[in-house]
Length: 604
Image (cartoon, rainbow, N blue to C red; front, side):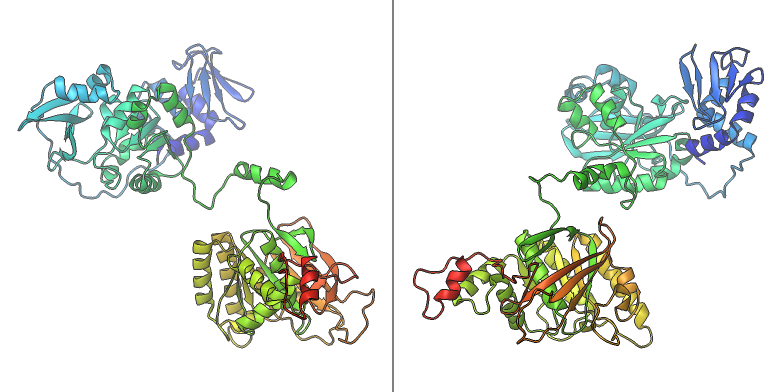
C-alpha cells in the first residue's frame, strides 16, 4: 500500500485519527482544533474531519499542512516511512507479504577519484550545473588512460550502493560497478518527509531538477531497464505523487509508460519539458520557473480511452458556433441543396435500407456525390454491379444528363480521379479483406467514406444457425473500424419482405438481426412511389428519404419528400425535377454533331 492509498484510508476515519494524534484537541463543527502538532489545546491547527476536504490539515501559525499521513509524521516526529508503518498498524492493515529470496549484491568499494577540477568540472558547469549542485551529488573525477571520467556515486542511507563512471567526451564509454544493486540515483538528497519526487532517465537530468528545487531521482540504466523498481519498491511507497521525466523520444515514452503502469497510474504523472530532456532545456535557457511550470502541467498517463470532458469543450463550442473559415463536417446534399439536419460525421456507421427496386443504392450514390462536392473521398464495394455500370450511373448523376458528351465524361473521370475508388470485386467478398483494403485506402489516400452495398454480398450469413451472432459481430467490426480510423461507413441492408410496399420500411424492418440497426449510429430508409415510366410528371413526390435514427445529431427523425429526374437518375427536392450538374464543364467550341444541345445545357 503506497502513501496515497494509506492517506485515503486514514481520511475515512479522519475524526478518530485526529483525536488519536491530538487527544487534547476539540471538535468544532466539521474540524478538529489544536494548538500545534505538539498536541496542546488551541485553535492554530485545524484538521478537516468532515466534508469534501476531510483528512486535510493546516497549522496557520507554523505555516505547514498536508494530509493525515503528514500529520502523523509531524505529531510523532517521524519520517513518512516510519509514519506509514505505525499508521498501518493503527488501522489494522496487514503489511506482511510473501518473501522471495533476495538476490545478493556486492557493495562497491569507494571509487578512486578526486574532486572535479579542470575536465569534469568544466564539463558539468558547461551543462548549466552549479558548483553547489556538483557538491550536493558528491561527483568525483577520474583520469584513466588519458581520458577524463565523471563518477556518479549512488548513495542511500549513508551507504555507497552503486557507482557509475562516464567519459565526458564519449557517452558510449559508460559503466557501472559489476554486481552492484540496481537502484535509483540521488536518494541521499531526498527529505524523509518528502511526498513527491521526480524520476528522470539520467543522472544529470536529476541534478538539473534538484538545482531547480525539485526533489529528483534518476534510473541507473536508461529507459529500457527497470530492475531498480524491485529494489526500491518499499522506498517508493511513501510517495503520493511520482513525476516521470523521461526523454521525449520513442524509447523514453515507452519506458515512461512501463514505469507508470508498474508504480501505479493513480499516483504517477508524466512531465513534458521544452526540450528532449531536463538538462537540454536548461542549456537552452530554461530557468527554475520554467521547470516548476512544467511540473505543474504534468498529467497522468490515463488510458487512451479515458478523456476529460473539458478536453472536448472546444469541439462542443464549434457545434454551437461553427467557424465558417474552418472545415466543417459534410452534410447531406441533394439537388444542389444542403440539408444540415444530417452530417456525415467521422467515426460513425450509417445503415441504408429500402425495398428492392426502390432506389436505395441510387439514392446513396447521389448522396455520396454530394459528399465528394464537399471535399470528401470514398471507396465503394458493390458486388452486384460491375465497375463500368457503377461508373455509368455516377456519370449521369454527376452531369445531370442522360447522355453527356465524351469530353464531359472525360471531365467527370478527371474530377473523380482523387475522389472516388472502387473495391473491384464482382460477387461476394469477405469482411476481413474488405476492412483490410479499406484500412489501407484510409491510411494511404485519406479516404473517409466506405460503402458496402450490400451486407448480403459479404461472407456474413443472412439466416441459419449462428447468423444473428455473425451479423452482430460484423456490425461491431464496422463500427469499430469507423471509430478507429475516423471514417464513415455506409452499409446497405435489405428489409424483410412485407405484405406490401405502399409504405416505407422502418428501422425494425431490416432483415436479420436487430443488432444491425442497434449498432448503427444512423439509419435511413428509401421509398419509391413506383410510378410508371410513361406517366406524366405531376406535383406528387416520387419518393421519400427518411431518417429513422441519428444517435449524435439534434434531429432524430425526418422525412424528405423528393422528385425523380429519370434521365439524370437524380432525386430532386423540387417538383420541377430540374437536374443539377455536380461536375462543372465547359463545352468545346465545336462539339461533335448531335451533341451540341446537351453540352450547352450542361454548361448552363
